[in-house]
Each structure stands twice: as structure tokens, then as C-alpha cells.
Length: 512
Ligand SMILES: Nc1ncnc2c1ncn2[C@@H]1O[C@H](COP(=O)(O)OP(=O)(O)OP(=O)(O)O)[C@@H](O)[C@H]1O
Ligand SMILES: [Mg+2]
Image (cartoon, rainbow, N blue to C red; front, top):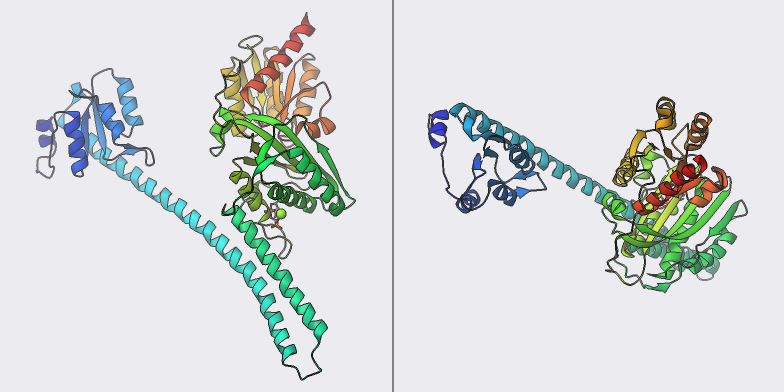
């Protein structure tokens, strides 16, 4: 090996160090920087992959040095593992020549550098984005406080004029008005600070055990009067919800903020619905939403039939000071406060919207007590006919991917379609091979309801399960029939398993 290396780099510009064991190798690697490490899989004290793992950094997806793995013939799994743990290349030991070493060394150094530079650039970009957000926040606060201060200073100036007026000319009514103006903006300033502090989680929540339904009933009474006659307020509150620990007065503010947003989105009137329920967010859901811990939650949904939120702005709505409203109409702190509250309560918030149709905000608040209770894994029903083929129609790639993974884990086979048209083409092509359609209701254009209607024109007994980001109540009121099978998003694997099981079972009964 040393001989080959010396031959590959004859002019002596390569300084070679060797280590006979893994421990020695590690010590050397940590003691100085190397242009490249040739790492044997078979070391007397450990295997090369273990050594590689110990110098691997997941953040950059690189080891601390460029590495070329040396393996025996037929050790494909070792080679793949080596690449997975940050090696740039491998050489089969039987094929070592000065030529192969030279190529591997050059490649390892180049690939390593490229990748390290990219990782550094990404980190810089993230840092820049963070700075941009901080900049926006600062300028937002500065702007709002400047406005408040100009009102204060303007009125102070007017008051000074009054006080220095000749005796008898002082207008006490005007003075009182100016004082009131100052008081009002100071109160607005205090409110701004309160929301900011809640967002930045500086404010301690005064948590107590509370019944979410009671809080909603109280807030709704308050709101009905102020939202105006064109907005209907509805409540669908689940019985027997577990009580949760929460700051009741902040929760009321959260409900009011969301309702005011809903009102603003329904200038021509509409319906505001509060809905509650218990829900389990499972490992699948948690894996996709890193801030979520799997477990039992109380779900509070606030939906409106307003303008909806465009995709381009949807990912920004929780940002402090993000608003689409004209100056003076919105501070952009409403949802930032909602977000801060929910996170501080150990919960999660998500939003689902169809532009032109409406929006649903869902808050998930963790069930109180018993935090670390380990539960027996739920017993999943056996697939009715393992290997049944389910056509999954869903326009969101991520959601469709998760559904497919869940269904396949349950023992079903799947076909996928990214919209109603593609799904219908698949139905026409595959016909009787499809055992069930699992479809989103709103997919832009040709929707899930039409899809199922047309599919059933061809295959009348074809079972279908509908899903939607809207709440079941909204969907049942407008879209699907009472006996249609429906599961609301987000669904967990166990619930999905049961729905599919029942829907497939129905056809079995009809066929006999
Ligand atoms: N129910 C909704 N329907 C449509 N758009 C919404 C809805 N809720 C929020 N938005 C959008 O999200 C943006 C941010 O909302 P947020 O409550 O944080 O601020 P705001 O309402 O603009 O101002 P503020 O609440 O501070 O008075 C809004 O400007 C609006 O564009
Ligand atoms: Mg708002």
C-alpha cells in the first residue's frame, strides 16, 4: 500500500502516515489534518465502519476527513455503508494499484471539498434567513412604536401649547381630549408588547385545568354580538373531552384573534364554526411535524367560509408582523400570538385552506396529566383481503406519500393519482383490479366527489373513502352523502385501517 502510494506520488509531495489499529488511526486523525484516509474494513481492534461512524458528522453528512474505504471482494454492503457514513469512494483490495489509489485520492479530496463548501453555503443561507426574519421583526416593532410615539409627542406638544396659553384661554376640553388620545395609544402599545411577549414566550401562562367547550361557549357569546348579523356562528362541541391545562384568558384571546381573522376574510358574510374533538396524533404525523410529540390531544377547529389563503402566503401567516391587510387594519401579530400560545401550551397548530372556499385552523392542545404514559400499541384490524388494491387520489405529494406508506404497511397495494382526472383514467384502465378509492375531496378542478361518481358509473359497487382537510361537519353539510365513508385529516394509521376495513367489508357483504 505504502509502496503503491509512493509510486503514485513520486515527487514526495505526499506525506504518508500509517496506523496498525483503529485506535491508533483515530488518534492520528484527531491529532492533525489529513488530505485523505485509506481505511481498511478489517482492523485488529474494530471494523473500519465503526471507526468511520465515530468521525461522521450528520450536519455536513461528511466524516472529518476525506475517506476511501478498502474492502474485500464481494463486500457490496460494506461499500454502500461506507458511502452512507461519509466515505467518498472505496477500493477492492485485490485491485489496488498505484493508479487506482491516485484516482481514488484525487476524487475523495475533490468530492469532500465540494460537499463541505455546499454545507457551509447552506449554513450561511440559513443564518441569513434568520437575520432577515429578525430584521423584519425589528423594523415591524420599530414602525409600530414610532407611530404610537408620534401620537404621544404630537399630543404632548398640543398640551404644552394649552398650558402656556394666556390665563383664561386654556381649553380644558381640548386638554382632556389630548390626554385621552395619549392614554389610548399607550394602551395599544401595552397590547402590542403583550402579544410580542407571548410570541417570544416571555410571558408566563397562568395555566389551570379547564374545559375547552366552556371556553368556546363563553367566547362565542361575546363574539356573536360583535361579528355582525351577516356572520353565523356555529358550534359542534364533542362531549366527554378530557380536561386540559391552559391559560383561560389567553385562550379566549386566541379564539377572538382567529374569529376576527375569519370575519375579515368574509366581508360579504358567511359562517364561522367552532368544533372540538379528541384526537391521537400518531408517530406518522409526528415524523412529518418535528415539533409534535405523538400522543392524545384535544382538537379545536375554527373554520370560516371566507376568501381562503393563497399558497404563496400560507407559509408566512404565523410570522410576526406578516399581514396582507392595509396599514392601520392589521398589525400581523394575531396569528403570531396564536402560535406562541399553542407552542407554549405544548401543542400544535395547523391550517388548511382552499382559496375561494374557506379556511380551517386547528389547534391541538395536549391532554393534561399522565405525560409519559406508555400505551400498548393499538391493535390494527387485519386487512379484509390482504393485497387488495387501493387507488389513492390526493394532490398534495407529501400527504399522498404518507397515505401510501400507511396503506402498504397495513398490507394493501396501492395505485397513486395526483388529481381526479389521472385517477379516473386509472379507474378506466384498471377497472375491476381496483378494490377501493381513497380520495381527497378538494383537488382543484375535478374533485373527489366527481371522481367517485364517475368511477361508480363504470363499477357501481366500488367502495370509496373520502378524506379532507375540512372538518367532517363541513364536508357532510356540503359535499358527501350521510352514508359515504369519510376520514378527516390528519388521520392516524389505526383510524385509517378501520375506515378502509369497514368500507371494503361493505362491498363483501353486498357481493354475497
Ligand atoms: N381566516 C383567514 N382567512 C384568510 N386569511 C387569513 C385568515 N387568518 C389569517 N389570514 C391571513 O394571515 C394574515 C396574518 O394574520 P394575523 O392575524 O397574524 O394578522 P392580521 O389579522 O393581518 O393582523 P392583526 O391580527 O394583528 O390585527 C392576515 O393578514 C391574512 O392575510
Ligand atoms: Mg388577525
